[in-house]
Amino acid sequence: MIADRARRSRRVLPVLFFALTALPLAILCSRFTTSADADSPVPVVEELHLDQEVEPIIATYIDEGIDDAARRHASLVLITMDTPGGLSDSMKLIIQHILDSPVPVAVFVSPTGARGASAGFFILLSADIAAMAPATHTGASTPIFLPSTFTLPIDEVLRKKINNDAMAFLRSFTEKRGRNPKLAETAVTDARAFTEKEALENHLIDLVAANSEDLLSQLNGREIKRFDGKTTRLTLTGYTRQQFELSAKQKFLARIVQPDIFFLLMMVGILGLYTEFTHPGVVAPGVVGGICAILALYAMHLLPVNFAGVLLILLAFALFIFEAKLSSHGILLIGGIVSMFLGATFLIRSPLTPAGVSMGVALAVTLPFAFLTVLLMRLVLKSRSWRVATGKEELIGEEGIVTTQLPAGAEGMIRIHGELWRAVSPVSVAEGMPVRVKRVEGLTLFVEPLDIAAPSGV
Image (cartoon, rainbow, N blue to C red):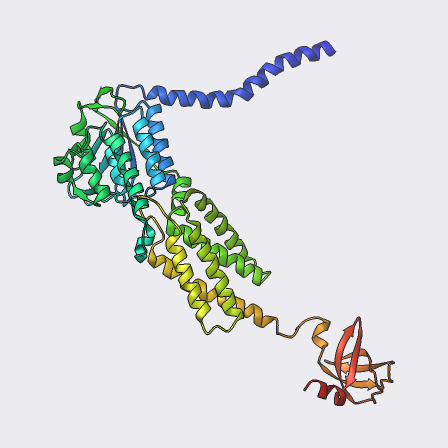
């Protein structure tokens, strides 16, 4: 019997092993099949879109798109771009992905009227093929310092240091791409911008194309030099275009890391938690505030946050609370509004683009936040002076009528709120006389005759 069971178990174990490994093997096979399918003779063009500010989520998206193109053995990665710029760290990551890409990368400023400004200018010049559509422009990549908005003095050594760093980074790949590094530097030193015609005539870009189809037609059969010095010929006859889109998660996270949304989440988080702490039991503000605060912390991890801006916002919050407690004739309130506005303006900083909270959003959030914070704190302070309206404590100070004579120091009965209560008085009180409750212990009221208690309340 035991031997039969052992034989059956030996037959079953391989079946179980196969069942447990079949699904992972199927997944792996599907991946290899995807790559194998890409070996088909039809050239594949992987198309990506950079149509918003350059930030960490977009950098991840570009990286994943280039990797996907490599797995598919695509012939070309086409990045259509329309951006005002963005964060320098994210820009550098995108450029590193482009320079390291095993698949040739074309960056195309499109459609008509688009721009590749600030960080977009760097990305455009880093590509194997740089192209622009008619009536587009690029450039204006001077490093921006947020304090200059308020005409505060800036250390010229620091300005020169960051300018030189940006120019050296631009030269490092522009020269190897065979473009015009001297003219490209003027986009940093003089904030110079270029139309598509100016960029083409001065060897900043390679092509001007009406649209992506026109660009791919011009690139078919073109020989290009890769960043590593190797030469390759693009064969795009009968190509198929593969769109690589942002995932739902990336689209959501891309919204969160936008400076305006980050500031709004942070303020809603602070206000929601503050409301819950000052008014326990409301629940909804605490839940919403907690979620917004966690999302803001996630964005803070990705964005270049200036902690001077965070401290200014915390100072503003403290000033709003003191305004509710102290009589400052509005001075603390005004100081808090100014502090929060400056904090919002300084909150996000980047060497190559302002990419900060816009003044309109900063003002639109600061004013309601200030008045709501002061209002909530005043309600809390006012509630502390309210008499207790529930429980036995509400009887303190109430008046009642003696129904059974109260001997001095002995119990009697009084009627209060239509109810009979045991009562004790330090002096004798006759039936029918009014008394006032001084304190409550258990189910016994300690009272005084009204003619004695009244003077003590004056």
